[in-house]
Length: 514
Image (cartoon, rainbow, N blue to C red; front, side, top):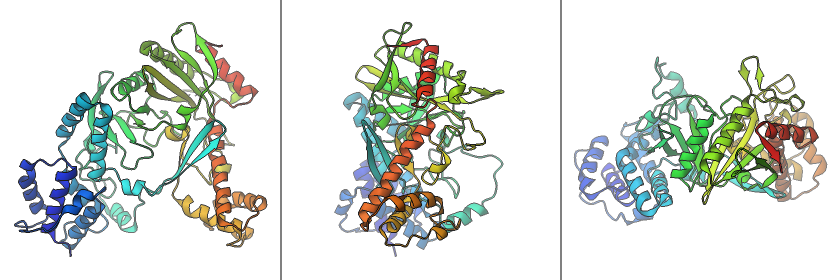
């Protein structure tokens, strides 16, 4: 049994150490927790709590909160995380305090120190799920001058049967509040079985091109200091000249971060298209490390270095310290791409009134230079590729079938958790620990059915009894698959037709090859 009175003292000590609890607020917070825990007085002696200052994450306290809640009927099994989130929301500084402190630190110590403040607070108050994130499997694949970063995402939890039962029993609401997972109104929201609790989220308000936006960190980060930049209004995604202005404003405030937008059409866009937002953070993506392949000049914008990037998909890079010119050229490219067709490459801008061309702009600063990468996308489908002509092709769906959004288009692959077990099982077959049974693998009920072709190929080409060698061979096949998926997403392929088409588009934007 958890002693609630001692738990309160642990939480207060933790909040003083990591959550900026002021001494003058300690009695107040203690009384709030006594009420929440249904206790009438604090303990006289909580014992030695010096271990608290050595905690790097609050996991042990989260477990005690949830155990206490279950033992005392303060929350129901299956939704205990809602209660622990609520308690950490109580212990965290108010949003106004966080914003005031963030900008004070930025003014006195610089933007990275301000980001460190918010990022560390978000870990310590259990908003960023660091322990879960650390479980992700990650490796790099070097392919000539380029590198792909590949992760098997084990951090985002799947709902268990109890949570699913709660979800099914929920009454249907006529009005959804908050409207989506990104809305500002999530700040402090209690959550329920189908919507995460957000009492502990803290965001930073800012203005982008005259409009109200805010920044928060991702609870299940895919890379270092993964943040999300969100329009305060619940308004659909769009890619326009204004998108470029917004991103430029963001990197002026956060020159330590890159930021980019998912494309604004289904198939080639992100998972949330009904609320305008960008992805950002302190990580330089593999694509951003790639070099120019072909340089172009623009008579209209002579201060901008422009060119095609030596990358798997179709990327235009603009570099300049002249913000106005680089912004305007990026805007010209966006406008031109939306109406550009090149049928030899399968690029068709419209079917009737339905648009197919869109793009993902990504911006970062390097000293005084603004670097804008524009990934050209097209979401057409046909009978051969019903999931998308410029999407992962069917032969690669065993590894990745989900949409290839901004992050993966830049070379950081987020692969499904199922692969951890599946790849290990495949390695056992290759090295002979498990017998290869082609008939059984062709049974659609078999757990490895989706990998049957890959397994047959590997068994035929890799001869080893060493499990580690087999695992390396499987990972290499995954590496090659991820690379080929990026080639699939290229609207202009690396062949003669694609090069001619890409050059034609650059010319349409007023640029000539150097």
